[in-house]
Length: 388
Image 1 (cartoon, rainbow, N blue to C red):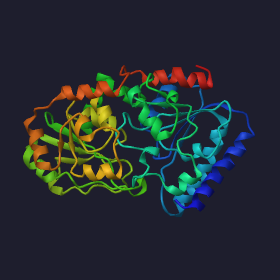
Image 2 (image 1 turned 180 degrees about the horizontal axis):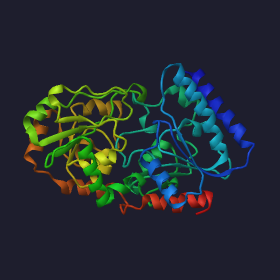
Image 3 (image 1 turned 90 degrees about the vertical axis):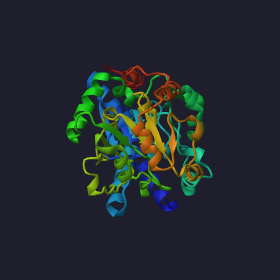
Image 4 (image 1 turned 90 degrees about the horizontal axis):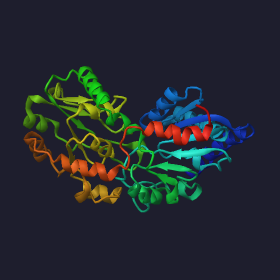
């Protein structure tokens, strides 16, 4: 991002904030994301709980996914002004990722800003932890904006992971809490919800009874989220040859990836592109095992205590480009493979160490009782805005 664009974007946010600052604070919750066109994850879980428990509390949704071309820039400009206005007029502002408008202003007294983050655990490095990495924040941006500033509260899944987030956000440890839990993980702890979701996914994608379902959910590649691409490391043809006709693979690409994976027609009935499915939790509930590389999905998937395997032939290069908070070779909840052949043989044999997954889960979550959304409303929303 050029200096001129950064200055313009800051000016637009501050214009909206200035206009809003002339008005009294409203008893309002804003749920905002700068990486998607609709709410999901923690923000959607919080929205649903507020609607169920306290429907009289006004809730505003700001969901904007960056796009190129003139139309995308015009949309971003409008969003910047609106976000600034809502920051100035709302008592509670909740985000789930990097969100530029927060960092461009000085919040008013009486406004609480909460970072729920979109990923549990602490896997890939982020924020200020990326100093010196090719994936790091734009130098021009860092000269003008203190990213990840102005948070009053940040949710983490476990207290032992808070120092990583404190480093990434350059925020004091006391602003991080694991006592609430992870709202979006609540459904995965509900056996009835998981069973219902699994049935719905099988019906939607016409998966035959007794077929084992594998979820392939890799993270994206590329130095920027705006040019994200997927890897071609998994040989789906070879996987089909080894696993035979009693398996199905649900392919879920990272939401940042705009292009679709081209599946060979010969894979029909075996590999299914489920990238457009709105709720990855439902895909997790429907699957019998997970294949991934560097995705933080491993944390929530561990709550199901089902097998996890890693296909990561480029992990050394990824370490140099992005880096990890954990020891990739030692700390993962499943075996690492560099090619499809041994991965397929492992899945075919079916000899899985789910105790390893359970240990990872226990180390990654301090609270797993399925009531995180309710606690967020009780401990954050109601004290911030009042009302029932």
